[in-house]
Length: 259
Image 1: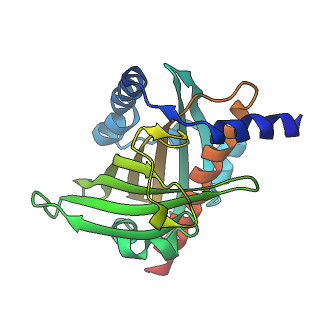
Image 2: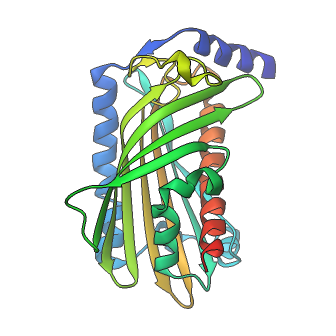
Image 3: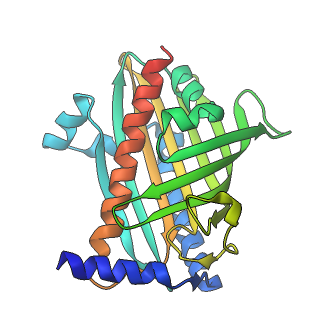
């Protein structure tokens, strides 16, 4: 069975796929609906997704462990949307430490290795102390036993102050171009939207809340990719879940390194 899954996924690497306007529209609709939910609730009330958790999930979070939950992992309009929410509590941490860690883009290759191999950012003209605005360029990599993929990517990222104890951020991909050879960047990239479709678009949201002697964090990763091969939905789910959990652990380590 595992070999059949691997064969299906390997076949999807061989063929390229065009990102259709209807696929992008479905993703944009999903994003708009999500932004009416968790980010809006956090801005108005300070509540996070984890606040409704109970039992072992809540206890794990209180113990400082990352807790991750699937929100969406299904095909839609000739594509697939993968959305996971994650949360972690960092005792003794402060908002400024989180901001320093996430806004230090040149340090990303060290903080978020091996997923980020190169990173830089420019501050946009409309940036202000309470609304930090960046354009960030990242080289992303993904490796498994059967494939290696790399991307040149450009993101629009904003970090906004809600009040002195609450900040949020929204990072949207403006461009993601898959390299033709992950190990040889000089080979160039596929035309955007005409590649293997492993990552067409991505939005990342952070919500940070300082209270009770620590920092509560929520991250939402929402990705658009090619349709999930029949029988392999577990792969897209597993990949995104692990990425969110790693993001939380890496961010906690980055925060602790700037204390």
